[in-house]
Length: 495
Image (cartoon, rainbow, N blue to C red; front, side, top):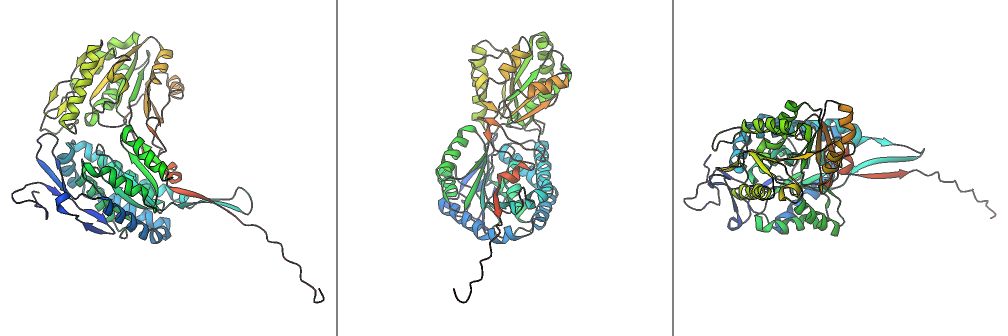
Protein backbone atom coordinates (compact mmCIF):
# COMPACT_ATOMS: atom_id res chain seq x y z
CA UNK A 1 0.00 0.00 0.00
CA UNK A 2 1.17 3.54 -0.65
CA UNK A 3 3.33 2.31 -3.56
CA UNK A 4 4.74 4.96 -5.85
CA UNK A 5 4.03 4.55 -9.53
CA UNK A 6 6.78 4.51 -12.10
CA UNK A 7 4.99 7.53 -13.55
CA UNK A 8 4.24 9.33 -10.28
CA UNK A 9 5.00 12.99 -9.84
CA UNK A 10 7.38 13.87 -6.97
CA UNK A 11 5.51 14.07 -3.70
CA UNK A 12 2.39 12.44 -5.11
CA UNK A 13 0.82 9.73 -2.95
CA UNK A 14 -1.68 7.12 -4.02
CA UNK A 15 -2.46 3.51 -3.26
CA UNK A 16 -2.40 1.77 -6.62
CA UNK A 17 -1.09 1.95 -10.13
CA UNK A 18 -2.38 0.10 -13.15
CA UNK A 19 -1.02 -1.11 -16.46
CA UNK A 20 -2.62 -2.37 -19.62
CA UNK A 21 -2.25 -6.07 -20.40
CA UNK A 22 -1.43 -6.70 -24.06
CA UNK A 23 -0.10 -10.03 -25.38
CA UNK A 24 0.74 -11.16 -21.85
CA UNK A 25 2.83 -8.07 -21.05
CA UNK A 26 2.02 -5.26 -18.64
CA UNK A 27 2.17 -2.05 -20.64
CA UNK A 28 2.36 1.57 -19.46
CA UNK A 29 1.67 4.11 -22.19
CA UNK A 30 2.84 7.72 -22.02
CA UNK A 31 2.68 8.77 -18.34
CA UNK A 32 1.50 12.21 -19.35
CA UNK A 33 -1.92 10.78 -20.23
CA UNK A 34 -2.30 8.62 -17.11
CA UNK A 35 -5.50 9.40 -15.20
CA UNK A 36 -6.52 9.34 -11.55
CA UNK A 37 -9.32 7.61 -9.72
CA UNK A 38 -10.23 9.31 -6.45
CA UNK A 39 -12.01 7.92 -3.41
CA UNK A 40 -15.75 8.65 -3.72
CA UNK A 41 -15.96 10.08 -0.18
CA UNK A 42 -12.54 11.44 0.82
CA UNK A 43 -11.48 12.53 -2.69
CA UNK A 44 -7.98 11.19 -2.01
CA UNK A 45 -6.17 9.78 -5.04
CA UNK A 46 -6.61 6.01 -4.97
CA UNK A 47 -5.31 4.87 -8.35
CA UNK A 48 -3.09 6.34 -11.02
CA UNK A 49 -4.04 4.40 -14.11
CA UNK A 50 -2.46 3.83 -17.48
CA UNK A 51 -4.58 5.50 -20.14
CA UNK A 52 -4.79 3.68 -23.43
CA UNK A 53 -5.64 5.38 -26.69
CA UNK A 54 -6.66 4.05 -30.09
CA UNK A 55 -3.16 2.73 -30.80
CA UNK A 56 -3.18 0.57 -27.66
CA UNK A 57 -6.74 -0.55 -28.39
CA UNK A 58 -5.70 -1.78 -31.82
CA UNK A 59 -2.64 -3.47 -30.35
CA UNK A 60 -4.81 -5.33 -27.83
CA UNK A 61 -7.19 -6.49 -30.56
CA UNK A 62 -4.25 -7.60 -32.72
CA UNK A 63 -2.76 -9.54 -29.80
CA UNK A 64 -6.08 -11.30 -29.25
CA UNK A 65 -6.30 -12.09 -32.97
CA UNK A 66 -2.80 -13.59 -32.96
CA UNK A 67 -3.68 -15.81 -29.99
CA UNK A 68 -6.99 -17.00 -31.42
CA UNK A 69 -5.78 -19.92 -33.54
CA UNK A 70 -3.91 -21.60 -30.68
CA UNK A 71 -6.58 -20.98 -28.06
CA UNK A 72 -9.52 -22.09 -30.20
CA UNK A 73 -7.63 -25.26 -31.18
CA UNK A 74 -7.24 -26.35 -27.55
CA UNK A 75 -9.74 -29.02 -26.47
CA UNK A 76 -12.67 -27.42 -24.70
CA UNK A 77 -11.89 -29.32 -21.49
CA UNK A 78 -8.39 -27.83 -21.40
CA UNK A 79 -9.66 -24.29 -21.84
CA UNK A 80 -12.28 -24.75 -19.17
CA UNK A 81 -9.76 -26.40 -16.86
CA UNK A 82 -7.78 -23.16 -16.91
CA UNK A 83 -10.93 -21.21 -16.07
CA UNK A 84 -11.51 -23.50 -13.10
CA UNK A 85 -8.00 -22.62 -11.94
CA UNK A 86 -8.90 -18.95 -12.33
CA UNK A 87 -11.96 -19.43 -10.11
CA UNK A 88 -9.74 -20.84 -7.37
CA UNK A 89 -7.34 -17.93 -7.78
CA UNK A 90 -10.12 -15.35 -7.35
CA UNK A 91 -11.18 -16.96 -4.08
CA UNK A 92 -7.60 -17.34 -2.84
CA UNK A 93 -6.85 -13.64 -3.32
CA UNK A 94 -10.20 -12.18 -2.31
CA UNK A 95 -8.71 -10.04 0.47
CA UNK A 96 -6.68 -8.12 -2.12
CA UNK A 97 -9.68 -7.07 -4.14
CA UNK A 98 -11.81 -6.28 -1.07
CA UNK A 99 -9.23 -3.63 -0.21
CA UNK A 100 -8.97 -2.35 -3.79
CA UNK A 101 -12.69 -2.11 -4.52
CA UNK A 102 -13.44 -0.56 -1.14
CA UNK A 103 -10.99 2.23 -1.97
CA UNK A 104 -11.90 2.75 -5.64
CA UNK A 105 -15.70 2.64 -5.52
CA UNK A 106 -16.56 2.65 -1.82
CA UNK A 107 -17.95 -0.88 -1.87
CA UNK A 108 -18.82 -2.61 1.39
CA UNK A 109 -16.49 -5.59 2.04
CA UNK A 110 -19.42 -8.03 2.12
CA UNK A 111 -20.55 -6.81 -1.30
CA UNK A 112 -17.08 -7.37 -2.76
CA UNK A 113 -16.84 -10.86 -1.27
CA UNK A 114 -20.30 -11.66 -2.67
CA UNK A 115 -19.05 -10.45 -6.06
CA UNK A 116 -15.98 -12.67 -5.92
CA UNK A 117 -18.03 -15.73 -4.96
CA UNK A 118 -20.42 -15.10 -7.84
CA UNK A 119 -17.54 -14.50 -10.27
CA UNK A 120 -15.88 -17.75 -9.24
CA UNK A 121 -19.22 -19.49 -9.75
CA UNK A 122 -19.40 -18.08 -13.26
CA UNK A 123 -15.98 -19.48 -14.11
CA UNK A 124 -16.80 -22.84 -12.58
CA UNK A 125 -20.15 -23.01 -14.35
CA UNK A 126 -18.34 -23.06 -17.71
CA UNK A 127 -17.74 -26.77 -17.06
CA UNK A 128 -21.47 -27.28 -17.66
CA UNK A 129 -21.05 -25.90 -21.17
CA UNK A 130 -18.63 -28.53 -22.48
CA UNK A 131 -21.33 -30.65 -24.07
CA UNK A 132 -23.07 -27.62 -25.53
CA UNK A 133 -19.90 -26.15 -27.04
CA UNK A 134 -18.77 -29.47 -28.53
CA UNK A 135 -22.18 -30.76 -29.52
CA UNK A 136 -22.94 -31.55 -33.13
CA UNK A 137 -26.45 -32.39 -34.20
CA UNK A 138 -27.62 -34.08 -37.36
CA UNK A 139 -31.29 -33.24 -37.99
CA UNK A 140 -30.96 -34.61 -41.52
CA UNK A 141 -28.69 -37.50 -42.57
CA UNK A 142 -25.50 -36.13 -44.07
CA UNK A 143 -25.97 -32.72 -42.44
CA UNK A 144 -24.26 -31.43 -39.29
CA UNK A 145 -24.82 -28.33 -37.17
CA UNK A 146 -21.94 -27.27 -34.97
CA UNK A 147 -20.86 -24.27 -32.91
CA UNK A 148 -17.55 -22.58 -33.63
CA UNK A 149 -15.88 -19.65 -31.82
CA UNK A 150 -16.38 -16.22 -33.35
CA UNK A 151 -12.88 -14.79 -33.01
CA UNK A 152 -12.06 -11.82 -30.81
CA UNK A 153 -14.73 -10.68 -28.32
CA UNK A 154 -14.78 -7.19 -26.84
CA UNK A 155 -16.13 -7.07 -23.29
CA UNK A 156 -16.95 -3.71 -21.68
CA UNK A 157 -17.62 -3.91 -17.94
CA UNK A 158 -19.04 -1.36 -15.44
CA UNK A 159 -17.94 -0.38 -11.96
CA UNK A 160 -20.94 -1.21 -9.77
CA UNK A 161 -20.39 -4.98 -9.48
CA UNK A 162 -16.86 -4.74 -10.74
CA UNK A 163 -15.53 -8.26 -10.13
CA UNK A 164 -18.69 -10.11 -11.16
CA UNK A 165 -19.36 -8.15 -14.32
CA UNK A 166 -15.77 -8.08 -15.56
CA UNK A 167 -15.63 -11.85 -15.07
CA UNK A 168 -18.97 -12.32 -16.80
CA UNK A 169 -17.70 -10.32 -19.78
CA UNK A 170 -14.90 -12.83 -20.40
CA UNK A 171 -15.83 -16.24 -18.91
CA UNK A 172 -18.19 -17.70 -21.52
CA UNK A 173 -16.34 -16.13 -24.48
CA UNK A 174 -13.08 -17.74 -23.33
CA UNK A 175 -14.75 -21.09 -22.66
CA UNK A 176 -16.17 -21.09 -26.19
CA UNK A 177 -12.71 -20.65 -27.70
CA UNK A 178 -12.70 -16.92 -28.35
CA UNK A 179 -9.97 -14.55 -27.29
CA UNK A 180 -10.96 -11.38 -25.45
CA UNK A 181 -10.18 -7.72 -24.99
CA UNK A 182 -11.63 -6.46 -21.70
CA UNK A 183 -12.13 -2.71 -21.49
CA UNK A 184 -12.29 -1.71 -17.86
CA UNK A 185 -14.12 1.18 -16.26
CA UNK A 186 -12.28 4.40 -15.51
CA UNK A 187 -14.07 4.37 -12.13
CA UNK A 188 -12.41 1.11 -11.01
CA UNK A 189 -9.33 0.56 -13.21
CA UNK A 190 -7.36 -1.32 -10.55
CA UNK A 191 -10.27 -3.59 -9.62
CA UNK A 192 -10.76 -4.57 -13.25
CA UNK A 193 -7.02 -4.99 -13.77
CA UNK A 194 -6.99 -7.35 -10.78
CA UNK A 195 -9.70 -9.48 -12.40
CA UNK A 196 -7.86 -9.66 -15.73
CA UNK A 197 -4.49 -10.27 -14.12
CA UNK A 198 -5.84 -13.02 -11.85
CA UNK A 199 -7.54 -14.86 -14.72
CA UNK A 200 -4.47 -14.50 -16.96
CA UNK A 201 -2.29 -15.78 -14.14
CA UNK A 202 -4.21 -19.07 -14.02
CA UNK A 203 -2.31 -20.25 -17.10
CA UNK A 204 -3.88 -18.49 -20.08
CA UNK A 205 -1.45 -18.18 -23.01
CA UNK A 206 -0.29 -14.61 -23.83
CA UNK A 207 -2.84 -12.61 -25.79
CA UNK A 208 -5.85 -14.77 -24.92
CA UNK A 209 -7.12 -12.14 -22.47
CA UNK A 210 -6.02 -8.52 -22.89
CA UNK A 211 -6.95 -5.55 -20.73
CA UNK A 212 -7.21 -1.89 -21.61
CA UNK A 213 -8.37 1.22 -19.78
CA UNK A 214 -8.73 4.79 -20.93
CA UNK A 215 -9.07 8.24 -19.46
CA UNK A 216 -12.71 9.40 -19.39
CA UNK A 217 -12.17 11.84 -22.27
CA UNK A 218 -10.87 9.07 -24.53
CA UNK A 219 -13.60 6.45 -24.05
CA UNK A 220 -15.29 7.08 -27.39
CA UNK A 221 -11.97 6.89 -29.26
CA UNK A 222 -10.95 3.62 -27.64
CA UNK A 223 -14.34 1.92 -28.02
CA UNK A 224 -14.60 2.97 -31.66
CA UNK A 225 -11.11 1.60 -32.39
CA UNK A 226 -11.93 -1.71 -30.74
CA UNK A 227 -15.32 -2.23 -32.37
CA UNK A 228 -13.95 -1.21 -35.78
CA UNK A 229 -11.01 -3.63 -35.62
CA UNK A 230 -11.63 -6.39 -38.19
CA UNK A 231 -10.66 -9.16 -35.75
CA UNK A 232 -13.38 -8.16 -33.26
CA UNK A 233 -16.48 -10.24 -34.05
CA UNK A 234 -18.65 -9.80 -30.94
CA UNK A 235 -19.29 -7.01 -28.45
CA UNK A 236 -20.76 -7.44 -24.97
CA UNK A 237 -21.56 -4.39 -22.88
CA UNK A 238 -23.04 -3.95 -19.43
CA UNK A 239 -23.98 -0.43 -18.38
CA UNK A 240 -26.49 2.34 -18.89
CA UNK A 241 -29.08 2.37 -21.62
CA UNK A 242 -27.75 5.73 -22.81
CA UNK A 243 -24.25 4.40 -23.45
CA UNK A 244 -25.59 1.05 -24.65
CA UNK A 245 -27.46 2.78 -27.47
CA UNK A 246 -24.21 4.41 -28.59
CA UNK A 247 -22.38 1.06 -28.48
CA UNK A 248 -25.16 -0.58 -30.49
CA UNK A 249 -25.07 2.13 -33.17
CA UNK A 250 -21.29 1.84 -33.54
CA UNK A 251 -21.46 -1.95 -33.66
CA UNK A 252 -24.27 -1.85 -36.23
CA UNK A 253 -22.18 0.42 -38.43
CA UNK A 254 -19.50 -2.27 -38.49
CA UNK A 255 -22.01 -5.17 -38.61
CA UNK A 256 -20.85 -6.55 -35.25
CA UNK A 257 -23.45 -8.40 -33.13
CA UNK A 258 -23.95 -7.05 -29.61
CA UNK A 259 -25.06 -8.45 -26.27
CA UNK A 260 -26.36 -5.53 -24.18
CA UNK A 261 -27.35 -5.68 -20.50
CA UNK A 262 -28.53 -2.18 -19.72
CA UNK A 263 -30.44 -0.12 -17.19
CA UNK A 264 -33.23 -1.51 -15.08
CA UNK A 265 -36.00 -0.29 -12.84
CA UNK A 266 -36.87 -3.37 -10.86
CA UNK A 267 -40.53 -3.79 -10.04
CA UNK A 268 -42.05 -5.60 -7.07
CA UNK A 269 -45.78 -6.28 -6.94
CA UNK A 270 -47.30 -6.88 -3.49
CA UNK A 271 -50.75 -8.40 -3.82
CA UNK A 272 -53.40 -8.22 -1.12
CA UNK A 273 -52.76 -11.78 0.11
CA UNK A 274 -48.95 -11.40 0.35
CA UNK A 275 -46.88 -12.20 3.44
CA UNK A 276 -46.07 -8.57 4.22
CA UNK A 277 -43.12 -9.28 6.51
CA UNK A 278 -41.48 -11.47 3.87
CA UNK A 279 -42.18 -8.90 1.18
CA UNK A 280 -40.74 -6.02 3.21
CA UNK A 281 -37.50 -7.91 3.96
CA UNK A 282 -37.00 -9.00 0.37
CA UNK A 283 -37.82 -5.59 -1.07
CA UNK A 284 -35.51 -3.80 1.36
CA UNK A 285 -32.71 -6.14 0.27
CA UNK A 286 -33.53 -5.56 -3.37
CA UNK A 287 -33.76 -1.80 -2.96
CA UNK A 288 -30.81 -0.87 -0.75
CA UNK A 289 -28.02 -3.46 -1.05
CA UNK A 290 -24.86 -1.75 -2.39
CA UNK A 291 -26.62 1.63 -2.06
CA UNK A 292 -29.10 0.49 -4.72
CA UNK A 293 -26.35 0.59 -7.35
CA UNK A 294 -27.37 -2.69 -8.99
CA UNK A 295 -29.16 -3.07 -12.31
CA UNK A 296 -31.64 -5.44 -10.62
CA UNK A 297 -32.45 -3.08 -7.73
CA UNK A 298 -36.11 -2.70 -6.75
CA UNK A 299 -37.27 0.86 -7.45
CA UNK A 300 -41.02 0.45 -8.06
CA UNK A 301 -43.16 -1.27 -5.42
CA UNK A 302 -46.73 -1.69 -6.64
CA UNK A 303 -48.94 -2.45 -3.64
CA UNK A 304 -52.61 -3.31 -3.31
CA UNK A 305 -54.49 -0.53 -1.49
CA UNK A 306 -55.92 -3.00 1.03
CA UNK A 307 -52.48 -3.67 2.52
CA UNK A 308 -50.54 -0.56 1.48
CA UNK A 309 -50.48 1.16 4.89
CA UNK A 310 -49.38 -1.98 6.72
CA UNK A 311 -46.76 -2.76 4.11
CA UNK A 312 -45.36 0.80 4.07
CA UNK A 313 -44.88 0.66 7.83
CA UNK A 314 -42.95 -2.62 7.57
CA UNK A 315 -40.77 -1.44 4.69
CA UNK A 316 -39.91 1.77 6.56
CA UNK A 317 -38.72 -0.30 9.55
CA UNK A 318 -36.54 -2.45 7.30
CA UNK A 319 -35.03 0.65 5.70
CA UNK A 320 -34.32 2.26 9.05
CA UNK A 321 -32.34 -0.81 10.10
CA UNK A 322 -29.95 -0.27 7.19
CA UNK A 323 -28.48 3.10 8.10
CA UNK A 324 -25.36 4.18 6.23
CA UNK A 325 -22.53 5.22 8.57
CA UNK A 326 -19.68 7.02 6.76
CA UNK A 327 -16.30 5.39 7.22
CA UNK A 328 -17.70 2.21 8.75
CA UNK A 329 -18.17 -1.16 7.08
CA UNK A 330 -21.77 -2.11 6.59
CA UNK A 331 -24.16 -3.64 4.10
CA UNK A 332 -24.67 -0.49 2.05
CA UNK A 333 -21.27 0.92 1.10
CA UNK A 334 -20.90 4.40 -0.39
CA UNK A 335 -22.33 5.97 -3.52
CA UNK A 336 -20.01 6.17 -6.49
CA UNK A 337 -19.70 9.97 -6.29
CA UNK A 338 -21.02 13.06 -4.52
CA UNK A 339 -22.72 14.01 -7.78
CA UNK A 340 -24.75 10.79 -7.63
CA UNK A 341 -26.02 11.75 -4.17
CA UNK A 342 -27.05 15.20 -5.40
CA UNK A 343 -28.90 13.71 -8.39
CA UNK A 344 -30.75 11.23 -6.16
CA UNK A 345 -31.78 13.93 -3.73
CA UNK A 346 -33.12 15.97 -6.66
CA UNK A 347 -35.29 13.00 -7.67
CA UNK A 348 -36.69 12.80 -4.15
CA UNK A 349 -37.42 16.53 -4.06
CA UNK A 350 -39.13 16.37 -7.45
CA UNK A 351 -41.37 13.53 -6.23
CA UNK A 352 -42.24 15.42 -3.03
CA UNK A 353 -43.14 18.53 -5.00
CA UNK A 354 -45.62 16.46 -7.03
CA UNK A 355 -47.45 14.75 -4.19
CA UNK A 356 -45.25 11.89 -2.98
CA UNK A 357 -44.51 11.37 0.71
CA UNK A 358 -41.06 10.56 2.11
CA UNK A 359 -41.76 8.13 4.94
CA UNK A 360 -38.14 7.48 5.87
CA UNK A 361 -34.55 8.26 4.84
CA UNK A 362 -33.25 10.43 2.05
CA UNK A 363 -30.65 12.38 4.03
CA UNK A 364 -27.27 12.98 2.38
CA UNK A 365 -24.59 11.62 4.66
CA UNK A 366 -20.87 11.63 3.89
CA UNK A 367 -20.84 9.86 0.55
CA UNK A 368 -24.08 7.98 0.97
CA UNK A 369 -27.82 8.49 0.96
CA UNK A 370 -29.84 7.06 3.80
CA UNK A 371 -32.23 4.40 2.43
CA UNK A 372 -35.31 6.26 1.28
CA UNK A 373 -38.90 5.06 0.92
CA UNK A 374 -41.26 7.26 -1.05
CA UNK A 375 -44.99 6.63 -0.83
CA UNK A 376 -47.70 7.59 -3.32
CA UNK A 377 -45.36 7.73 -6.29
CA UNK A 378 -47.24 8.47 -9.52
CA UNK A 379 -46.70 9.14 -13.23
CA UNK A 380 -45.21 12.54 -13.99
CA UNK A 381 -42.55 12.25 -11.30
CA UNK A 382 -38.94 11.96 -12.41
CA UNK A 383 -38.53 8.93 -10.14
CA UNK A 384 -41.50 7.15 -11.73
CA UNK A 385 -39.83 7.00 -15.14
CA UNK A 386 -36.05 7.22 -14.71
CA UNK A 387 -33.62 4.71 -13.25
CA UNK A 388 -32.40 6.08 -9.92
CA UNK A 389 -29.48 3.69 -9.40
CA UNK A 390 -29.42 4.56 -5.74
CA UNK A 391 -31.06 3.63 -2.41
CA UNK A 392 -34.56 4.88 -3.18
CA UNK A 393 -37.68 2.81 -3.60
CA UNK A 394 -41.17 4.10 -4.31
CA UNK A 395 -44.57 2.73 -3.35
CA UNK A 396 -47.28 2.95 -6.03
CA UNK A 397 -50.77 2.17 -4.70
CA UNK A 398 -53.25 0.28 -6.88
CA UNK A 399 -56.81 -0.95 -6.49
CA UNK A 400 -56.36 -4.53 -7.64
CA UNK A 401 -54.22 -7.08 -9.46
CA UNK A 402 -55.39 -5.91 -12.89
CA UNK A 403 -54.18 -2.38 -12.25
CA UNK A 404 -50.98 -3.75 -10.72
CA UNK A 405 -50.20 -5.65 -13.92
CA UNK A 406 -50.86 -2.60 -16.10
CA UNK A 407 -48.51 -0.44 -14.03
CA UNK A 408 -45.85 -3.15 -13.86
CA UNK A 409 -45.62 -2.89 -17.65
CA UNK A 410 -45.81 0.92 -17.64
CA UNK A 411 -42.05 1.41 -17.91
CA UNK A 412 -39.44 1.58 -20.64
CA UNK A 413 -37.34 -1.01 -18.82
CA UNK A 414 -37.74 -4.76 -18.58
CA UNK A 415 -34.97 -6.48 -16.66
CA UNK A 416 -36.54 -7.99 -13.55
CA UNK A 417 -39.75 -8.14 -11.51
CA UNK A 418 -40.99 -9.90 -8.39
CA UNK A 419 -44.55 -10.74 -7.36
CA UNK A 420 -45.47 -11.43 -3.72
CA UNK A 421 -48.52 -13.55 -3.01
CA UNK A 422 -49.42 -16.61 -0.96
CA UNK A 423 -50.96 -17.96 -4.17
CA UNK A 424 -47.71 -18.79 -5.92
CA UNK A 425 -49.43 -20.00 -9.09
CA UNK A 426 -51.29 -16.71 -9.43
CA UNK A 427 -48.03 -14.85 -8.86
CA UNK A 428 -46.33 -16.94 -11.52
CA UNK A 429 -49.16 -16.28 -13.98
CA UNK A 430 -48.80 -12.54 -13.40
CA UNK A 431 -45.05 -12.72 -13.99
CA UNK A 432 -45.69 -14.44 -17.30
CA UNK A 433 -47.55 -11.28 -18.37
CA UNK A 434 -44.95 -8.81 -17.11
CA UNK A 435 -42.49 -7.70 -19.78
CA UNK A 436 -39.16 -8.65 -18.21
CA UNK A 437 -36.31 -11.03 -18.86
CA UNK A 438 -36.31 -12.30 -15.26
CA UNK A 439 -39.09 -12.88 -12.74
CA UNK A 440 -39.28 -14.01 -9.11
CA UNK A 441 -42.12 -15.23 -6.92
CA UNK A 442 -41.79 -14.11 -3.28
CA UNK A 443 -38.12 -13.21 -3.69
CA UNK A 444 -35.80 -10.25 -4.06
CA UNK A 445 -35.21 -8.75 -7.49
CA UNK A 446 -31.48 -8.87 -6.69
CA UNK A 447 -30.61 -12.47 -7.49
CA UNK A 448 -28.35 -14.13 -10.03
CA UNK A 449 -27.35 -17.69 -10.84
CA UNK A 450 -24.58 -18.40 -13.39
CA UNK A 451 -26.48 -21.45 -14.64
CA UNK A 452 -29.40 -19.35 -15.86
CA UNK A 453 -29.75 -16.87 -18.74
CA UNK A 454 -29.47 -13.25 -17.59
CA UNK A 455 -30.75 -10.26 -19.54
CA UNK A 456 -33.70 -8.03 -20.23
CA UNK A 457 -36.14 -6.70 -22.80
CA UNK A 458 -37.21 -3.24 -23.98
CA UNK A 459 -34.69 -0.56 -22.91
CA UNK A 460 -32.95 -3.04 -20.61
CA UNK A 461 -31.15 -4.55 -23.61
CA UNK A 462 -31.05 -7.78 -25.56
CA UNK A 463 -29.16 -11.06 -25.56
CA UNK A 464 -28.42 -13.30 -22.59
CA UNK A 465 -25.40 -13.89 -20.40
CA UNK A 466 -25.27 -17.08 -18.36
CA UNK A 467 -26.17 -20.71 -18.81
CA UNK A 468 -26.34 -22.42 -22.17
CA UNK A 469 -27.65 -19.28 -23.85
CA UNK A 470 -24.19 -17.75 -23.56
CA UNK A 471 -22.81 -20.38 -25.95
CA UNK A 472 -25.19 -19.14 -28.65
CA UNK A 473 -24.16 -15.54 -27.99
CA UNK A 474 -20.43 -16.21 -28.32
CA UNK A 475 -20.26 -18.82 -31.08
CA UNK A 476 -21.30 -19.04 -34.71
CA UNK A 477 -23.57 -21.77 -36.00
CA UNK A 478 -22.02 -23.66 -38.91
CA UNK A 479 -24.03 -25.98 -41.14
CA UNK A 480 -22.07 -28.66 -43.00
CA UNK A 481 -23.71 -30.86 -45.61
CA UNK A 482 -22.03 -33.89 -47.13
CA UNK A 483 -23.43 -34.57 -50.59
CA UNK A 484 -23.19 -37.87 -52.46
CA UNK A 485 -21.08 -37.36 -55.57
CA UNK A 486 -22.26 -39.44 -58.55
CA UNK A 487 -19.49 -41.54 -60.01
CA UNK A 488 -18.76 -40.69 -63.61
CA UNK A 489 -19.15 -43.51 -66.16
CA UNK A 490 -15.98 -45.00 -67.52
CA UNK A 491 -15.49 -43.84 -71.05
CA UNK A 492 -14.97 -46.54 -73.63
CA UNK A 493 -11.74 -46.51 -75.54
CA UNK A 494 -13.55 -45.99 -78.83
CA UNK A 495 -15.55 -42.97 -77.62
